[in-house]
Each structure stands twice: as C-alpha cells, then as structure tokens.
Length: 90
Image (tube, rainbow, N blue to C red; front, top):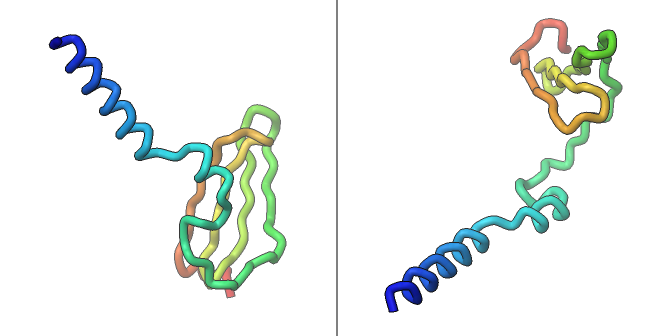
C-alpha cells in the first residue's frame, strides 16, 4: 500500500513538473515572449574578427547606446554588453 502511494506521489510530482515547462513550444513560437515596438534597427554592425580559437565581436549603436555582441562562429553561446549613452553614438 505504501509503495503504491509513493509511486502515485512520484508520478504526480513528475507530471506537475513536466507541465510547468514547455521546451518544444517556446522554441518554436517566435516573438511570443514580449510585445514588440515595431521599430527595427537594421543598420549594419561593425565586426571585429579574431584569430581562430578566440571569440569575435559585433558592435553597433541603438537609440544612443552601444551594443556589443560576442560570438564564436556558429556556436550556440554568446554574450551581450551595453555601453549606455555612448558618446560615439548619435
């Protein structure tokens, strides 16, 4: 009897845990996480490429702030840094 209760509790907790996340749905629903302003900054970015083995950098101005994006080829990781009110941005 106790084994059945423990098994039912385990199944219930796994079911509740699985229903809390939706890894497939979120990945396939673009732009569903926040409202969009409709403004698109499609100006080209300056890129800085480093020798193989080092991350590359892209940078551009957006609304007076400088945005830096670090990337390494087609890898799935990267980083973003923002320099607010950068004087080099008009």
